[in-house]
Amino acid sequence: GESVGLHLPTLSVQEGDNSIINCAYSNSASDYFIWYKQESGKGPQFIIDIRSNMDKRQGQRVTVLLNKTVKHLSLQIAATQPGDSAVYFCAVRGGSGGYNKLIFGAGTRLAVHP
Amino acid sequence: KAGVTQTPRYLIKTRGQQVTLSCSPISGHRSVSWYQQTPGQGLQFLFEYFSETQRNKGNFPGRFSGRQFSNSRSEMNVSTLELGDSALYLCASSLTGTAYNEQFFGPGTRLTVL
Image (tube, rainbow over the protein chains, first blue to last red):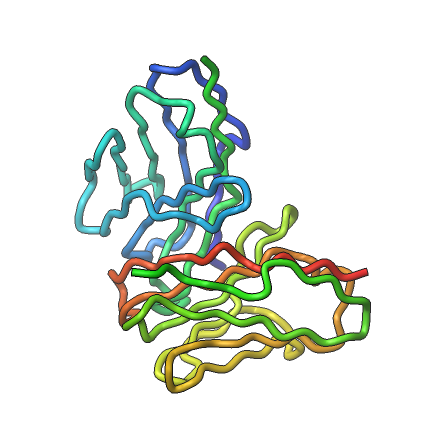
């Protein structure tokens, strides 16, 4: 069945360093991938997305890399700031679940230390 | 533009009771999806409504149901509550709910079942 997994439950980084959060997915038919950020007491907030016909996409301080061969995606945050502290989820859409059914990973907590 | 709103924000119920949660999507959005978030299972898709019709459904028992009104507002109902139903219930809206439409999440309703 479909599943989305994360390699690390908690990631601690120093302010100013780059952060990399990884995610593995199982359904090779998945065609759309999204990273969300969830702060305490709030719903998930869209960060960046990537379609399966791309392998890299950049936003402001964030980059998502997609490796369809090994079914892996990563989120890179440049110059991590204290405001980046949150739980980050990867989500997969498409495949057998239907277009609007998101399958979420377990989440990685990012802790940024001054 | 107002974001997704969910009411109530917090709810305490006892086992066997039923509960109704409400979600108002962003103005103009026609797709509403519901998710359950728990520490153990993470974020799990419940169902999606589009133009008053359930379009996708997750793997939850029939005690979980929903509906959507003509103004796109949505409600979900959980009958015969169990302790395991304690969770954060998140609603997300998108414009049309097609593959590449961003989903915007509300702050969630925190349900506690005693």
